[in-house]
Length: 259
Length: 259
DNA sequence: CGCTCGTTTGATATATTTCAAGAATTGTGG
DNA sequence: CCACAATTCTTGAAATATATCAAACGAGCG
Image (cartoon, rainbow over all chains, first blue to last red; front, side):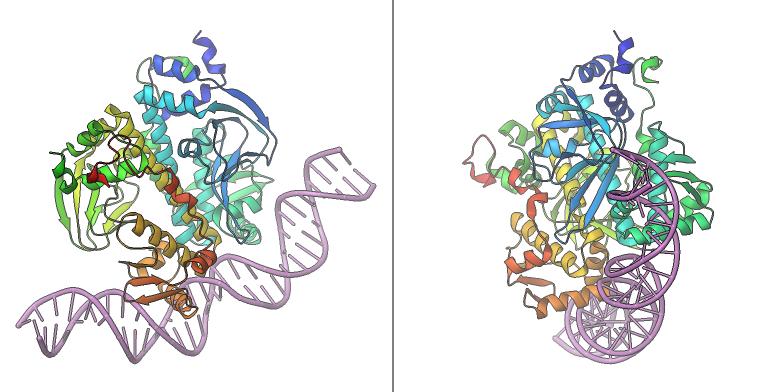
């Protein structure tokens, strides 16, 4: 029955948690035994809105999503962009009432896991709880880096930085490489992520392209000169804490299902 | 021996954790039994620097501290301001290597608790672990609100917002009231917290004062019109998750030591 | 094919920064 | 406790990065 694990809906969650802490078979099986329902969302659909009481933790199994808050003046700040395998709503579901909204970027599928089950699992199985805690901590670390970008870096640096971060995360998630990937995001959304205007994002993107740091075609990005881009981006990936990752679970290091 | 608890060095930590989750006597005793060393810091001294490996979790027992990151262009972004009772370095100590620096704002005292002891406690005692997790989650929620401010609100709104937040946190920590408190921070530091220039912070502060929303004398702030200030600040304290707080521990609700 | 949404571009406006210098406050050594 | 040094605060004038407004262009889609 372990064979079926790699196609299990919750397999990406196991994979994700294993990147933070080694999980033994029992732990992994426990994750896979979590109750859940699947649901498809269309692009732009809300998974949860600020102010709602969270009932589920949401595992993104395909597509992209983002988290955001709205300001009273109508401005929107995007705080995170999520891809397949991300547990999109751990914060809201643990804190109870949502302090930000989660919305689909593209169409996609999610697995909804009742928060009681998630919490029980986290506290029954310390390694799992620890991995989940880690996940939320890394999340916080990324927020801090974004704050630094938005608060103290100019437009060109900010945008390059996001491009670098996304490249690395896409590669880590197996959805692209560090030199080519698809950014499923409009320039308006990009603007809301970096705290700029769509117009200015457009100009900056074109400048980056003119300077041959990147190439673009539709939403596809090529990073033609990683070193130079990372340089102008002031990009130092320590904040992603990728070094802490375990490439393999502690036991059964050679089990192919998680390779 | 419970009498002595309120003067115990780690008592503020118990108090803090109890605000997030009810802790029974055994849990509270376990916290107080944590090994620690005390240390005094002078103003501006670093508690930990970005890139260091964290050895201790740091409980601030007096004074103020802040967390920050530096950008390659020399810019600094302050990500959090901490007061007595805050556990200043839970993130760094759980993630291992520090992705940001922690520095004293004023002179003050801290208790340094070896991270192994903190982690053991968190996983031996689920309620404590949960409270600590909560603490880091609320931390993240505050980051998100700051991101929104820095990315999408103008100078006046940003600064008012910080003033409101600080007022509420100071009151919660018993260090001031919602209408009067001491902000132990220079305008330059304030600028680095809100992503502006010291000059502009100064002008904005004066404008706020001219409009009779606040009064200032040295570092002391009076909020003369909370409603109006909160209005211009776009301040909605949900993100502080204060509603989740337990005012009393579950057992012994009348035990004076935690009142 | 026409519509809608996203991108691109230009011209103009403005919030915020930068630079600079004087006033006030705080810290410090004698 | 004073006097000098060092920050911190304040204010003005000029510069600039980014926003705003507006319009044309292109691509995907029913």
